[in-house]
Length: 112
Image (cartoon, rainbow, N blue to C red; front, side):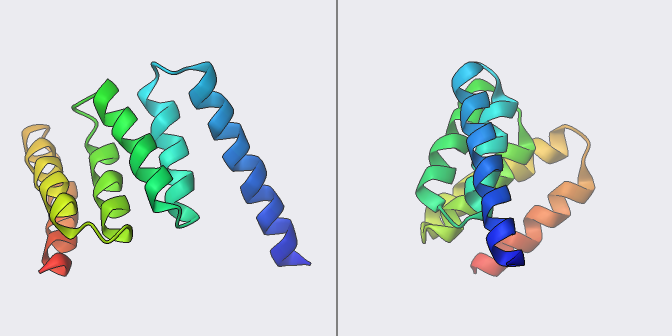
């Protein structure tokens, strides 16, 4: 019963983010939120598409780049994940977020 409730809540949440991205196609956060929801559901191709939209709308969105890297990892696209995560790390350092850069380094070392 609890699992069914969680699934319904997850579906409703996904639908909410799908509507938000449709209603606000120029809002990076809408696409990021949708991409994260797909990532949580292990729907990697959909996550990549949404997160790429977020990054296309805001190329300085480090969190979206990190999640995009995670989606590429989930999709088995290691080379693309490495490329995106390197970009995210450079951006995190440029924005003064050394903690995020360290977190990205951990992800990169897991790819080796």
